[in-house]
Amino acid sequence: MAFRWKNDLTHADVTPRDVFLNRRQILAGLGAGAAIGAGAVIAGGMPTQASAQQGLTPNSLEDITNYCNYYEFGTSKEDPAKHAHQLTTAPWSVKIDGMVDRPGDYALDEIMSAMTIEERIYRFRCVEAWSMVVPWNGFELADLLDLAGVQSGAKYVAFETVYRPEEMPGTRFPVLDWPYVEGLRLDEAMHPLTMMATGIYGKPLPNQNGAPLRLVVPWKYGFKSIKSVVRITLTDTQPPTSWNKANGREYGFYSNVNPEVDHPRWSQATERPLGGGLFSRRKPTLMFNGYEEEVAGLYEGMDLRANF
Ligand SMILES: Nc1nc2c(c(=O)[nH]1)N[C@H]1C(S)=C(S)[C@@H](COP(=O)(O)O)O[C@H]1N2
Ligand SMILES: [Mo]
Image (cartoon, rainbow, N blue to C red; front, side, top):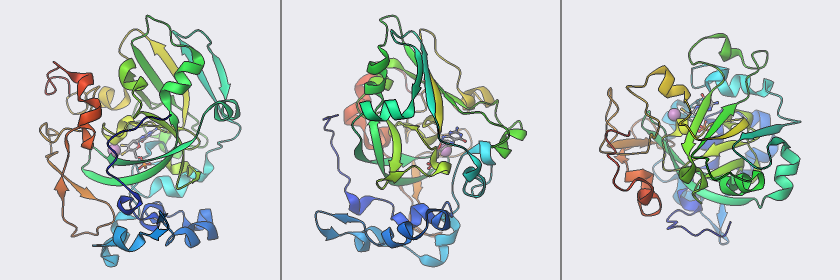
């Protein structure tokens, strides 16, 4: 909870709130609060919206306001914002099972009352080579795993997204093998940078962002950050992951952000920051998405090309 990392991001680096929200077209859904909050990103008493928006070209803003990946609601970037309101997020519980001392269905309320919610401003890099900076609210996954009591033989953590065809129109199509599943090595899961997010900008997570509880692993490609988690399983074998099952040649288990290892169909050396408009300058992608100092040790001695 008191973990300090080389945090070089402030609210000035946060993808402007209106950009972030607009891209999901949820301003209407959130009502006046979002609209009022749009220009009100304050850090240390100083309005930073102006600096955060430098370089924005409003005419191309529209192109990036619909970017969202939540395939259970459809594969186009606008689908999740259109359909995710159908998801019932309360009541919610997370089954924690496998190699834990206290397996069970943990009610979200129960989890929340045991956790300290803090804000973490993280870079977020999609494997498709767009990126943003998000002020998440949430808690360290390690704290939740401690609540359940990880047993000594456990080596991996498997995650599962809720699967409700009646609320998730995208699951009618066999794009992925539903439910969406993900996994981390235990040391990755226990790393203090790894969090479970419950909010953005101090407000509950919008459904299309993975309400009410989603994983955030800032040094890995975005698809590792599985949304709307209903099950967490401790295991001693590497769990299957949705994108790896769909295309193992293109999406590895680790999927650490790495500018030196290209996707078979495109370069990962640079990225397009969201919010900069169509003609925004690409910027270099950072090793481990800028968290090299904190996480490189997890992969010491590993061939990152073989273990992509
Ligand atoms: N269940 C589920 N989780 C998911 C996805 C998905 O389709 N289904 N998409 C992933 C991908 S590819 C990305 S880039 C991020 C996007 O998160 P955001 O929409 O909050 O930016 O969610 C990830 N988590
Ligand atoms: Mo992604």
